Structures are given as C-alpha cells and as structure tokens.
Image (cartoon, rainbow, N blue to C red; front, top):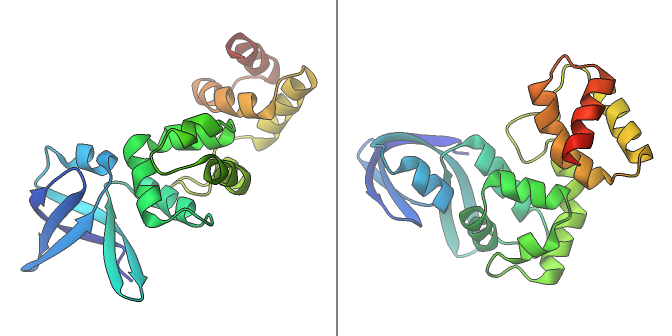
Length: 195
C-alpha cells in the first residue's frame, strides 16, 4: 500500500495534481484544501489514499495526514462515497467538519453539495463519538490535555450547570490549550465566559 509520494508538481488544478516521481507522472485527485496548501510549492509530499473498485483505480492525495485521516473517516459512513468526502473537504476545512459533527450542526454539513439531510444526520450519528475520541485526525484525542481527569471534571461540572456536551466540546479544547496547567475552577470560569 502507498502511504505517500514525494515528487515534483508538474500540473496543479483545484481538483487534480500531476506529480512526477522517478520518471512516472501520478494523476492524483485532491481537495481545495490540498490545492491551497500546494499553490506555492514545487516539490511536495502527498499523502495517498488508494481507492480501488471493480473497474476503477484512483489516487486521492492530501497535503496533510490529518486531512487524509478525516477523509477515511468520512468514507466509512454508509452513503458517503469518495466524491462526497472530497466535496466536503473542498467546501469546509477539516476543523469545520469536525466541529460541525461534534456540535451536531446538520445544517452546516447539509450545506455541502451532494449531502442531503439523511446523510448529514447519519454522519453526525456515526462519527460524533469517534471524532470526540480523536479518530479521523493525526492526533490521538480531541483533548490533548496533560490530565484527562481534569477535562472530565470540568465537562461534568458544566453539564451539571445546564450546558450541552456539544457546546462544551466546542469551547473546551481552546481553553485547555490556553491554560494547560489551569485549575478546574479557572477553566470552568473561562468556559462560562464563552458558553
């Protein structure tokens, strides 16, 4: 299986990349995120998802492993094919997609061309827990705090105060990042200002 191809960009369009490596030109389908990342580059590393079906063999390429992991997570949902996943990654950033899934923002997901209400609801239903646990991203968990017990305690306290987990999950990562050694009460106070 091919993990990545390192080479020189021969041709770059918003949907496709021709990458030369060892005298071979690879036709690789890309999203707008990857296109934007590669616009000023000549020699790049492209992370590959090799897609094989009965009559079709395609390479999907990504500028970051993180984007590829999210793509793989999206296509694991029944009814979301490679074209729909690529369209999602072209319409929304990886972070916007994750936040929409966590916040159960079906309308944001539905705003992507080709994604209907049922598909958007299925995406949220099937992927929310996985995204919160850090699947579909390069990192191991959404909350990369030194003390997961602290995160749990803060989340529990905020839920008891009447806030939804979806909203808490939206604001907490940023607060934890800004205050990695913060006390529970300080993190709760910071969260209350944002919720």
